[in-house]
Length: 264
Image (cartoon, rainbow, N blue to C red; front, side, top):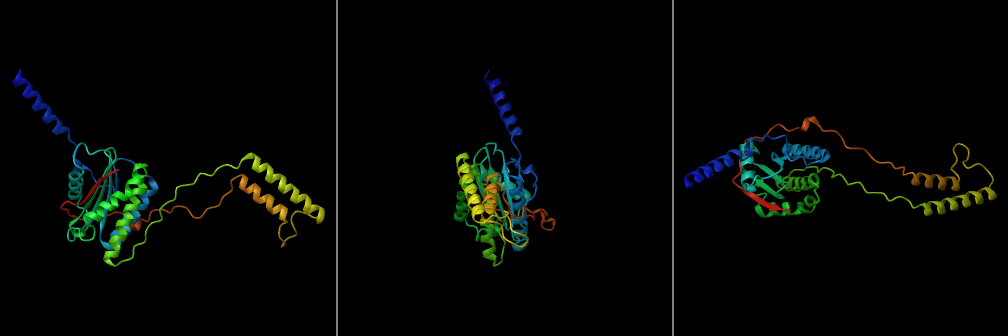
């Protein structure tokens, strides 16, 4: 019986090893590899554009990766394995960064290449991860990654003495509260009184002839109606991705395990 139990245990151990996920088999999808599917489309495009500008201006490659789970592995081992398998950063300078999020484990890791360790020391790397916590806890993964990428990019650009334009972080839409019915009724009565008073003192059309200015009552009525139906104007929209600044693959860089890990 004991011999049988040992055989079964050995078989289970071998099966567990065989079923262990090989993270190095993952292939990069770009600067952003969202294997967990949690980054919104707009944030992803802005991140791709910013990372492309960062590499063009400084030579530094920044990889942003999300995975569903660590499968029981330490995040330090997973990040280092991915970094080396993908070769983030150039082979000559080893100036690469990997920011990894394990969603279900709520763990984060910033892996730093050899060449960037003087610019991104462990203590600073930890502060970047801690700053991401509020957004990550609210599942705003794209926003958290964008803020971290900009922080890292600006520090690197400053260290190299170059200018790097930061992307405009999209603002979350504010919910407009509807105008109460009683308030609209009071304003309507007020406008009608203004119109009646205007007509009694200056009996003419609501609008002057071409080239003139609108009557006060008409202007107030138009403003009120415009606000009541929610008419709004806005500036330009979100632009398309510039194919001239696209991901061209990583360059064979290496990391010795420098960086920091955190949780949220």
